[in-house]
Length: 190
Image 1 (cartoon, one colour):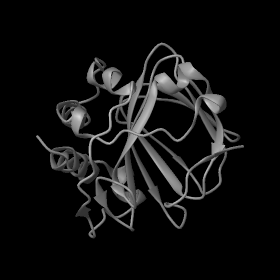
Image 2: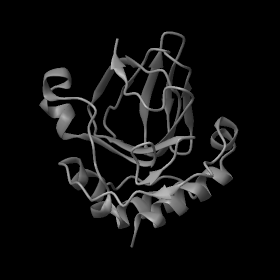
Image 3: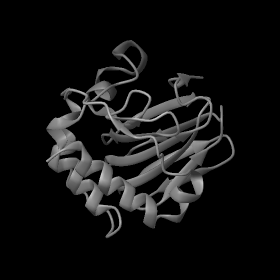
Image 4: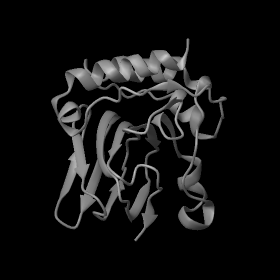
């Protein structure tokens, strides 16, 4: 087991998914950063994630779960900003990017998890973004539209486009790409 397993599965999904490969070119500057694992409360939720994706997304779900204890899990927010319940059921790791398991300056790729019953309030960031739902479903909102996004479906946001997300009875596991000049910066609540 290694994070190369997750990277390889993510690349295979990227290559087979038109929305992802049209969003951005797969980075050709990847270098192993040898990040040390970091466990958070969300790790157990991901490890026990039982929702099936599709034949296209399931291989990445399995790779994520196989390598769960090798990931360097993070949170962008604190309990004052989002509350304890949100914080307990949310986390991500940067698979590749400026501070990822695999260093890249060209593209940022995240594995993200939000538990059920979460409201990820209105926020924005400079980088353009595409979410691919691996398993579960959620309501994705912008000022222009609202969509329930399901496994193997995507949702994109342009630079500084305000957006939010709500999980209801299902958690979601996602593969997220960021492109553009803002890939070094974090999101900010609006």
